[in-house]
Length: 301
Image (cartoon, rainbow, N blue to C red; front, side, top):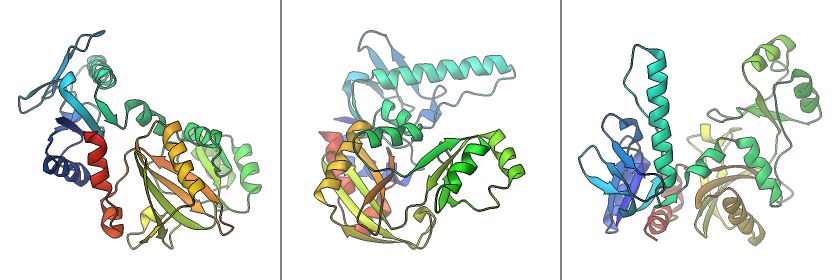
């Protein structure tokens, strides 16, 4: 059984999964797209299953011989530098087009799929889709309109802001952020996500197939990802929220995800985000939950 790991040896999570797959009796290879097209080779005849990957080691894998792929990190492509900018752009687009096509055409079991990965980059749409299945989300505005942002922020008791795409931690909106000249300059560069601040407890739920593992994250930081001293305490979610975890995973096309909740003092769970390729080793070490084992089982299913 051949299993690919989208990533490389620089990622401890990729390394841990590869080792666990090997110990389980399957064969694992890294699929490091940063080596394409220089060292990683691909071929595919559209409309057929005639396709292959030749790994940097020289090993040839037919796409029909790949059982599953674990999506850890996608590095894009790495085209050698060219003096002609137009040729550079063409080469990069051709490489990405070929790679994207094969990744979607490969009949292997992807955990998670290209479509799920793309959806994660559209966080406002993710929120809307999650709300459509009956899950509570924070009041949210995505905008680069200064007047709309000020009006929305003033309607909230407390507001936070974060990037629309992600990649930075959550911060509290202060009067200085709303200073007209500063705000106008920032919004000329990009829109921003403004949300109501949800008081309460941080809960993270890992969903792996139909298995759910959750823990309370005790932290004094607004964004617990900034707190290396955060305490993890295993918890059992109410049955209704466990079902919401499964509903969220389904609507977002995720077979494996980490869902972040805020548990309000009144007992209401509010959805914040679902990650299609979350880090998990620290969580697993602190709680004892068998996340690696369940992931390997899902990949070998």
